[in-house]
Image (cartoon, rainbow, N blue to C red; front, side):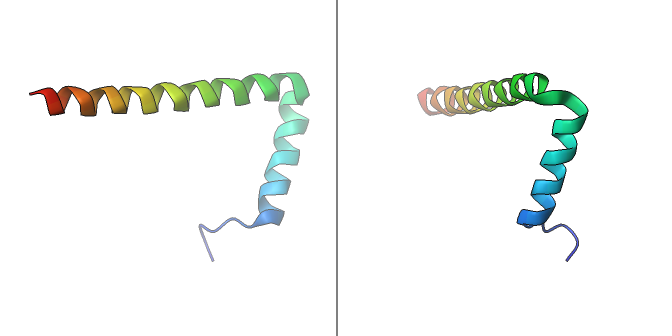
Length: 54
């Protein structure tokens, strides 16, 4: 079952990340990740719109 993460594995990873980065830094990382995903989706959507206009 290599490559499949279940709930216990995700909880262990989250706990380790919390210990390493701390709650304040972890929230900053989450916010940055969310903004990055939002910007990526926006860029993909803009790229699709540009291709349709040609």
